[in-house]
Image (cartoon, rainbow, N blue to C red; front, side, top):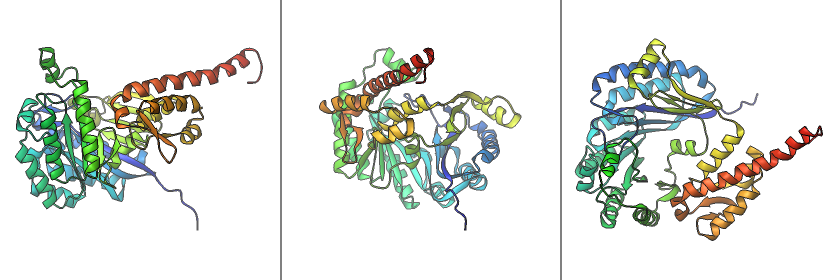
Length: 406
């Protein structure tokens, strides 16, 4: 008998850029009114999946994620064909997590049942709010009733892993309306909830509205909504495992966790990103250029970078501290060969402010209050990391300059 090394795990992301309409806050690469290009795009995706497969031959795929855009608007036949291509060309594990993002207005029992039978086993609905006025304010294409009906259809289709997206800080949102939204979502009994703070992204209709004088809930108001939701969801049995994500035990998003744990993934579609083979790259954010590039051999890459160890160590801090699992001294030392003590000294100070905590497993994580100011805290740690790295390099450089062994 011979020992065989287990195959490394890989995630696949497939971007579906089509939408029925564009929401006011959205800055993802998505297109409304382009249904005529769906068939051409399907040909390009199928070809791209096939031609990329050889480089992933030694990997087993344990997560597949269809994001957008609105994948459910793309049509269940095309989605089933894409998943069939993944099964044909890649080593898709038995029990792999296969997620579909969906809007309630483009999901019905018949299509959801067909998708579940094809192998989709997780669905994420963009509910966003349970208040009709708030949905209208951001031009969501569904109603509250359609959201309830979509969840019921998913359950009837025997989909047992359901996630709901909610947004706090919406135009006109109050403490009471946010609590109404959260309670409504809890009554639907999802396995997973994502609660995102509204961000005004440059170039969106919402940004134009704000520039014209519209007032949104400020940072302090958003912080209050967030902290209330964290406490309420914990009471309801949903563990916070990342800044914006909460799940019942065993229902954390395995695909999203791989991003935060620096595990490899390959993306397909315009604007999709990949982290594979020691480099990070993305495809052009242009539907026509992407289709032409795949089918006719044109340029597809928008960016690509080799990732040195020092940059990986920074990503370890940035992404690890987004999660409840956090970071750990010997994990850091053993992987990146860097001194953890300057970081731990600062984390001790954060803990004194209630922003960080050390777990029983000796891992450092941010608290819910720390998550609210995570950008500042992580930025501070990155500065200390860089100073520590330079302090390690300086004696070696001086020794070389003096002709001595470091």
